[in-house]
Structures are given as structure tokens and as C-alpha cells.
Image (cartoon, rainbow, N blue to C red; front, side, top):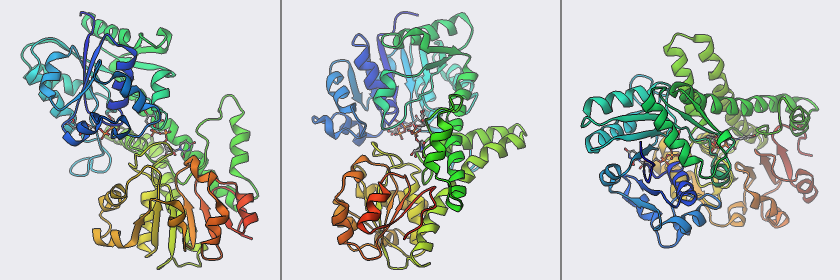
Length: 469
Ligand code: UDX
Ligand code: UDX
């Protein structure tokens, strides 16, 4: 295998876009072309003003500004990019199936298969195919099957190279990852393909941080990493309920256990529930795989992480209802934050969606403010649940561009995302314009509760038992 000089990536989303931008930045000698079927998305990536690229991620627009047009290209010409590249990353979405066998659990591999078929029909010379999307274990063999049976008699090597970047810190994570994982065959051709990808990353990542394994270990490691991380969040969240019944404070408990070096301080932040495109999907995948091998106890074990997370979201909504004298009918409740975490405009599986849905069921009047999420996305997220007619979602939810307007005249504020800017608001001004008693439900333990209480707010922070005075 000769040195890689041309890379193509299929899928210009939250993973493909930032990952390729950083590869292009770090490897000026490699031409990187990101392709996508979605013309509007590609047009946005090519927008003259790099502040208008379709994904909000701190530092990303600078990286794109530096590399775009030099060795980073965004295009809808999928065939051409596949044809030219020696190495093709597949970074298309793999949502949970919404139909048929495995509905609600298994990953829908429709797009992956389509990509494989397209690569097979276009490729005229040997290619290395890199799975970037998170996939069920043994997907590589399905891809290989399609490529070898429908291709033009050229050789394909399939590598698994799962992404560990977290949204909101994607550029830092890509710049200095804890590790890069590459899975490949142990045949001589497989080893050469692995080496070719190692060489790409070695342009900026120390070699000892580039781990190589067999394909299946690599695929399973990605699911396992996300399952462990999500499990930590569900574990700490399960304890918030105990804290609220006792004199314990979840922040103190997290600090106390986090100083044990075996446990470590990260991922112990209590919340209204984890969201994002990966955690739930990957655990469901793990559960589905375990069930399909008849491993009932293993499946039940991991499923509990999701059950706990769903419980946490519902519990938060129920607390709001209970505290507003058991009825929210017609009451304005302001949501600060809609994204699934701070510093991203991504809302997939955000807890806010489910909390809003529950409150809408109780006929609340919801006002939403999020610094980065547009109005259309809020409605799209609620409509996607199909709980009620689109008109009803429009009627029950209003989206604001100004946080003070969003809070004006409301009975309660619920903090759903931990955006830093919420901490710096003029809370006295917000208090003065709210109905009394003015309540705050802090689903992220973000705000300074004592300061707010001094103003007059009644505050409930998740995992503390201090009730309103
Ligand atoms: C990623 C990963 O790839 C997925 O495995 C992970 O578990 C979730 O996150 P992400 O980049 O976040 O996906 O998804 P998304 O932002 O939806 O981007 C995927 C892109 O692929 C979309 O822009 C879509 O238009 C494109 N696509 C999809 C194609 O270009 N061709 C297809 O056949 C299907
Ligand atoms: C995750 C993994 O971290 C990343 O390695 C993988 O590649 C993709 O999935 P992401 O979903 O982007 O990344 O964000 P992450 O920071 O993991 O947060 C996921 C969710 O957990 C968010 O809703 C976040 O608010 C929540 N969370 C995280 C908590 O509630 N408490 C914590 O302590 C940490």
C-alpha cells in the first residue's frame, strides 16, 4: 500500500465534519474531501463566512477557515471523491431502528449498506475502508461481504476506527485524544492497512497513544466505552433521589468519591439525564446484541442504565408539577437550554425534549431559550416524538431569542442545559419580572442557589434536599 495522499469521508455530520477538518489541518500533504448527500449541509460547510458552518463546536470554524480550499473540501460529488481516494471513512448516521425486527433497539444499518454498495460500484483500485460510525459488533464482515461480492475485483481492507470525541470539546479531543483505536485484520494486507491509518494519525498523535486491535475488539470497545460513561451518569443520578430524601448533597458525595483515584472525578455530574446521539443508541445496541446471543442477564444489566435515565427525566418533570401545586395547566414554564449539553447546537435525545413532552401532556405553556438551538429544531424535536399534533406543539411551546423575554411572566424556570452564560444573568431583573413565588428547578446544579434564594427565588437543585423556604 502506498502512502495515503487522498482521503474521502462519507457523511458531513457532527463526527465526519470535525474529524476531517482536524485531519486536514494536521496533514497538509493529504487531500481530504468530505461528501454528503445533503446538498444544503454541504452548501453550509462551504459558506464564505465560516461562522455559518452547520455545526457549532468551539474552535471548529477556525480550523475550517485554515484548511478549507487548501486541502479540505466539502462536496456532493460522492462518486468522484470515492474514485480518487485511497482511504474512505464512513461516517454516516446509524440511528436506532424505528421499524421491523429490533425496532427501538438495533442500529439501522441501511445507510452503511448503501455506502458500501456505492463504494463497490465506483472503486476501480484497492481501497481502505474505515468505519467511523459506531456500529454493532461484526458489521465490518457485512461491509466486506458486500464489497467483495459486488465490487470490480479490487481489494478492500476494512478497518474499525471508532470516534471518541465528545461534542462541545470535539476539537480539543481530536487535537489531543487519550487514545486512537484502530481495529484491522491480522493478515499481511490487513496489517498494511492498519499501518497506513496509524501513519495518518502519527502526524500529530504520539504513537504510544495509537492502539491497534482486531476489528471486533475495536467495534465492541466503542460500545463499551459509551456504556461505561453512561453508566456513571445513571449511577450518580440514581443517588440524587436518595440525597433528596436525606440530608446528603450529591455534589459533596460526587466530590468525596471522585477523589478516590480508582473512581476518578470525571463524569460524576448529576443531571436531569444524559442525552446525545450516542449513549442511548449504543447501550440499546449492546442490549440487543446480548439478547440475540441469549445473554439475558447481561442485557438486563445494561438496560437498567437506560431505565434509570428515563426515570430521571420523568422525575424532574414530575417535581416541577408537584411543586407548582400539582397543576401546570396554562402556567408559563421557562426552559433555559434545549441542547443535550453545553457548547453544542445538537439536540438529539436531549433531556429537554422529554421533560417538555411530559409537561405539555399536563398542558403547560412552555417558553424555550437556548443560545444555539434555532426555533425550527425545537419544534422538529417535539414533532418527531409524535405524541400530539404539530399544531398543538406550536401552541404549547414558544421559542425566544432573548432570555429575559423568555422568563418574563413565568411561574418557574427549569435549567436543562449547563450553558455558562446562564450563570451571568441579571437574576434580580429576572426575579422582578416573574410571577411569585418565583421558582427555579436547576436540572444541572449550575446556578448559585444561595444567591438566588437571597434574591427571593425558591430553588430546587437536583440531588439536594433543600426545599423552598
Ligand atoms: C455520528 C456517527 O457517525 C454515528 O455512528 C454516531 O453513533 C452518531 O454520530 P453524526 O456525524 O453525529 O453521526 O451524524 P449526522 O450529523 O447525522 O451526520 C451524518 C451525515 O451523513 C448526514 O449529514 C447525512 O446527510 C449523511 N449521509 C447519510 C450521507 O451522506 N449518505 C448516506 O447514505 C446517509
Ligand atoms: C459521548 C462520549 O463521551 C464520546 O466519547 C463518544 O464519542 C460520543 O458520545 P457526547 O455524547 O458528545 O460524547 O457527550 P458527553 O460529554 O459524553 O455527554 C453525554 C451526556 O451525558 C450529555 O447529555 C451530558 O450532559 C451528560 N453528562 C455527562 C452528565 O449528565 N453528567 C456527567 O457527569 C457527564
